[in-house]
Image (cartoon, rainbow over the protein chains, first blue to last red):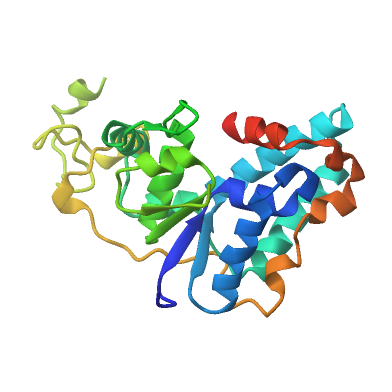
Length: 171
Length: 92
C-alpha cells in the first residue's frame, strides 16, 4: 500500500474513536489500527464537511441522550473542538463538500440515486439485511469526487456499495 | 415564463446556458438558479479537488491520543451502550 492511497472516513469512525470505550466496545481497537496505518505512512485520510456535519448531528443526539436534556452551545462547541483536534492530529485532509460538487456541476441527488440503484443489500449471519442509505450514498459520492480509493466505515451495508470507491469495512 | 423570453434575440453560450435537451438555450440572466442548469457530459471538466485543510502525517502515538476523549469531557457519556451508538448512527 503506497502513501498515495487515500481513504475517506465515515462519521462512525470518528464517533467510535472519541466516544467512551464503554460505548464503543471493540470498535475502538479497529480505529486505532486504522490510525496506526496512517502513522506508518501506509494510508492518508480524507473527509468532507458533509461527513463532519453528520458527526456533529450524531454527537448532539448522543449527548442529549446521555445528559437527558438539550445540550447547550458550550457543550456542543467542546465536542466540535475535539472532533477538529482529532482530525488535525490524524492528518486528515478536509474537503468542502460544496466545492467538491460545484466545478463539475454535479447533480448530486441524481448521482446519489444512481449509487442506490447500483448498490445491493447485504445479508449478515444474524439473518439481517443491510442496505446503504441516501446519506451514505451522498458520502460515497463526495469520496469519489476527491477522489479517494477507499471508504473506511463501520457500516456493514457498504459491502454492497457498487461505486468507484472501494469499501474498507471495519465492521 | 422562460418560453416567452426565447423570442428575444440572445447571445447564447452553448455550454453554460444549455437547459435540459441540447438546443434549448436562453440568456444567462434568465437562469433562475444554477441548480436548474443541465450540463451535458461533454461540458464537464475534470477539476482536481483541493482540500480546505491539508493534513500532515501524524506523529507516533497519535492512534490512541483521542481514544474515548469525550468521556473525559462528559463523564455522562460513559452511561451510553454500544446499542445507543449504533442506533444514533443509523438515524442519519
